[in-house]
Structure formats: C-alpha cells, structure tokens
Image 1 (cartoon, rainbow, N blue to C red):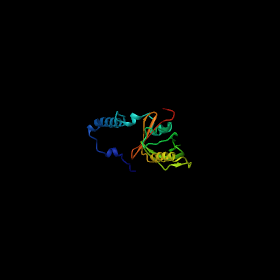
Image 2 (image 1 turned 30 degrees about the vertical axis):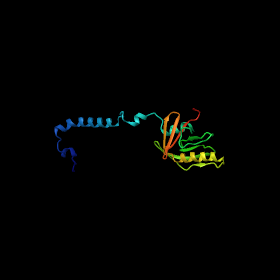
Image 3 (image 1 turned 90 degrees about the horizontal axis):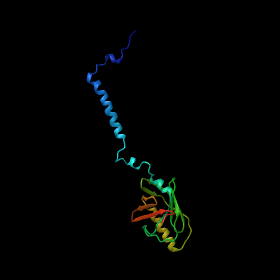
Image 4 (image 1 turned 90 degrees about the vertical axis):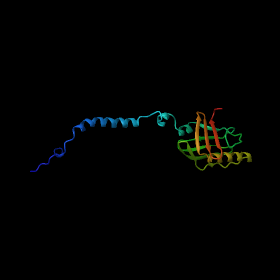
Length: 169
C-alpha cells in the first residue's frame, strides 16, 4: 500500500526571517485598508451626511414663482405654482392653465420632459405670460436650493426662475 506524503514534507524550509516579517506585513495591510475607508475632512459624503438630498428638498415644499426676481420677466396677477413628487413628476398652476410633466434628476442637473397642460383659454396677455413661463420651465437644466425657503431653476439664455416656499413672503 502506497501512502501519500503531505506537501509539507516535500516543501523547502522557509527562511527564518519570513516568520518575523509576516505579522508586521499583515498589520500594515490592515492599517492601510482601514485608513483608506476612514472619512476625512475632504470627504463630501461625510460633509453632507444627514442633510436632505435635492429630491427631498424639492418634494418637501410647494413653491410659488417670484416673478419680480425671475428672468425672463413673467407678468401675471395669478400665482404661478410648482410642486414636485418623489415619483419624479411635477405639476402646478400657470397664469391660465394647470400643467404637469415628468422630470429626471442627477445631482443638481434636472431635465424636465414635455409639459402637458389643460386647454383653458384666457386673455392674450395672460396666455403670453403662460407661454413665457412654460417655455422657460421646459428649458431649465439646473436646480439649486440656496436657502430653506428659496428654490432656483436655471438654464441657458438667462433663464433664472426663482421660487419661494408657498406661504413665505
């Protein structure tokens, strides 16, 4: 009957210094791994931990356009409103009609998909204000929440729509 020898018996003996180096090498490797995973003062994730993301900010309020601070200028006596949902839809009241659309959000970049609106007719100046607003809203490319009660939507061609929290002055 033939017996198999374990590979240890055939292996070359290890040099004496190998055993002494093994523990420091393991400790150094673990230290490097833990240090790489530890948050630093430059880590944006630790700096923003616990703060709401932009979708939470958008959906936490119902917004009213500040037409005196926004560009393009939108002249309307009716309040122009905007609300967002967690399901990535937005809706509101334009100067004459109610509107809605879906949107995509990537950090502060926003893409508003084609806007649907009711077909109520109003006086020509009101319809002109509505067209100006909805065209600007459709062209928005970025969202910024500069304060708790202020929302800014910006885009090309000097689009700067400023909304305030509904109920704030």
